[in-house]
Image 1 (tube, rainbow, N blue to C red):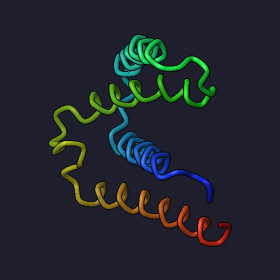
Image 2 (image 1 turned 45 degrees about the vertical axis):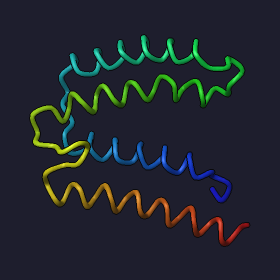
Image 3 (image 1 turned 120 degrees about the horizontal axis):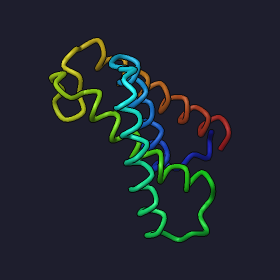
Length: 115
């Protein structure tokens, strides 16, 4: 954890934010998740074709996970009063911010403890 680069910290915070939103706004409607999978396949393939194919499996997985997350996030927050990506409910907003902050503090702790 001490060796996580700053860019990856941001990506992990994106994931934390996404999962927090899914927790509060989960909708079991198959249409949302099937559409997100379809968009993920189409955009993920396009992204794979546009980058160096010698990337790691984790990098390849991210190319498909990100469009899935964006698509499903958009569907879940539609009509919920979000401003940009921020929930109108203060409690939900604070949970997401607190989880991301805890992650960053944990990474900084490990960086300091195990340089």
